[in-house]
Length: 231
Image (cartoon, rainbow, N blue to C red):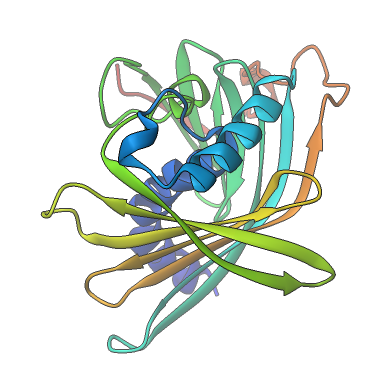
């Protein structure tokens, strides 16, 4: 089982990081794009989601994440959670915890009893932080009004995003929005290589009472851990 988890960690983190960006799009969708270049209905719906998300003090999400590629016989599934407030967050996924206190990122791996500490450059295009998620998709995608589905009693309206960059390995991204709550239910990314990744929001809570040390790394909690300071 440990070997399986280690193998999945090698395969999935980069893919998940990219998809976390997409999930962030689902939670913090872009604003300010020119309506003439978009499907107006899609943009209007995304604007509603954006406005609602920006009104929250904090967001707590439980999610399920799957990665499938029939050609490569890959079918993996995992679950996780993330709590976000401002530019701080705590992500639990694949047996790891990533805690960002606004200055440093702490990656905690209980199985290996190891902690990596690194600085985060929010100006770096590849850096993922909640504050950057607000503007990550400001450009580079076209929006289209897509299908409507009923899922578990929810009426979902999908918005399709297609990358402008022809070299992008992603073919399209489908964002499923609950029309009643204007919250994201799922994000489905289809790659040009046939890989499909799906993130389903199982629980979406806002403005929760968070502990004062929610985003604080307390070294004394990990007395036997090896601490690797990368910066």
